Amino acid sequence: MLNKVLIANRGEIAIRIMRACRELGIPTVAVFSEADKTALFTKYADERFLLGPGPAKLSYLNMEKIIEVAVECGADGIHPGYGFLAENAIFAGMCRDNDIEFIGPPVEAMELMCSKIDSKNTLQAAGVKVVPGVTEAISDPERAKDIAHEIGYPIMLKASAGGGGIGIQMVQDAEEMDSLLESVQRVAMNSFGDDSVFIEKFIDDPRHIEYQVIGDKAGHIIHVNERECSVQRRHQKLIEETPSCALSPEMREEIGEQAKLVAKTAGYYNAGTCEFMFKDDEYYFLEMNTRLQVEHPITEAITGIDLAREQLRVASGLDLEYEQSDVVARGHAIECRINAEDPLNEFAPAPGKISRYAEPSGPGIRIDSGVYQGFTIPPYYDSMVAKLIVWAEDRGRCIERTKRALWEYQIGGVRTNIPFHTVVMNHDVFIKGHYDTSYIPRYGILEKVIDYVQEQKAQSGDKKVAAAMAAVGAVTSAMSQNQGK
Image (cartoon, rainbow, N blue to C red; front, side, top):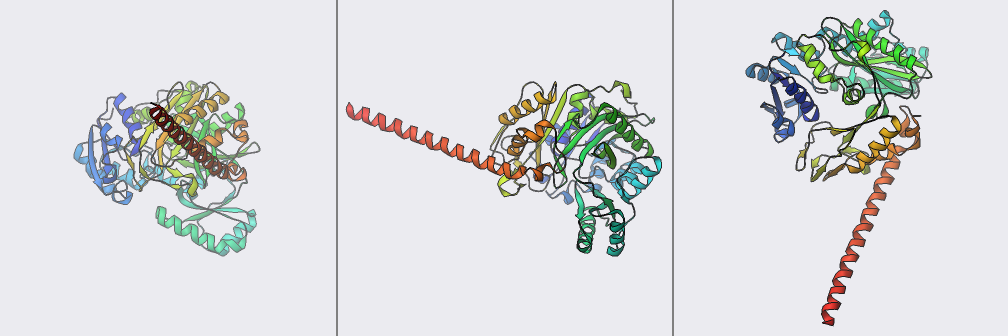
């Protein structure tokens, strides 16, 4: 087993990994920015080291400093969490060069899967069903127009090194190609240091299905069922659930085998996620995220498999504790990403000091968070502050339980997207399970959220007026009684 693990991340995911380490008896090391000096994860760790100023480039993305700290404190493992350096093959290579176990896949698998172009070519040759398109780096607008004309508009321009919805543009016709290609290339270079762009056929309104896979260094690979991630805004996931109500048992098994084929072809071990687009009983492999996913807790909820624990065991050279036949799903789970965002300002990030904080609890409720009352959410990082994970015996009861948990969740001082989740959980289309990636714009969900927030504010104002009138009435009554005396 690893002797000491440094967590190269922050917030709720850092605490999540530290908890798994504590259960295995592994000491932990937190690294943090000046903006996170008072964060919960720094208090939970056995050791803690300051990286630098708040901006991520000066702290959580400072690879040399993180390696320096690991060597200094004697950590023989680094867990990158998700985001930041989690899919950075250069950082994984630096860990290997310093005899530190990168708790993730091998460098070679990361290099392959982090290049959408190389991975699609390799996987297509192995028999994986990929999205129709041309997997070559495109830089010439005229060449791009020829390809788009051949496969048919609309098409998608995608950054080869992209992720998280960054570096993606839909092109409707040839007139848009020049400007949008240049835009995607610029974003790709600024975000990933690689301006390679490729073209895929745009598949209209698919469902987004992803499969959790995990393997050990001996070559054993299993999939841990699927998650539905179709509730998205600007290609970023907001709500996830498992199992998907779109898949038959036969299709679930077939896509699961495809996910395992992806991992085996890449020479993959540790945890990863294969993403697919699904429509009209057809599916296509989209990409592989070579890391633990934000939404991994719902998989844990229905299978009972601790994915962070398995990551640590695999990194320590141990075999998986499970065979494919051991993976049995029970019940239904939903995750709501609780973000510090302002629904009345186009859901812009809304950092600030949390003046009131009370988490929901009760049967089937799990909260992964890294905040507390009095904590100031920094402006430098992702707006997600917590994850609400809900389990119940079936989907209907899971939705009802999620509604109750959202009603209980109290966060004051900053605006959050809890109203968004509340609106979705009460929306007929979501309740019936008839949604896809166009769900939010098609049904005007954001507009419904704004109406809901304004209605709540009005009701709150009415209550305050009523309370004030009652107080005035009480004072007037007391004065009258006193005058009568």
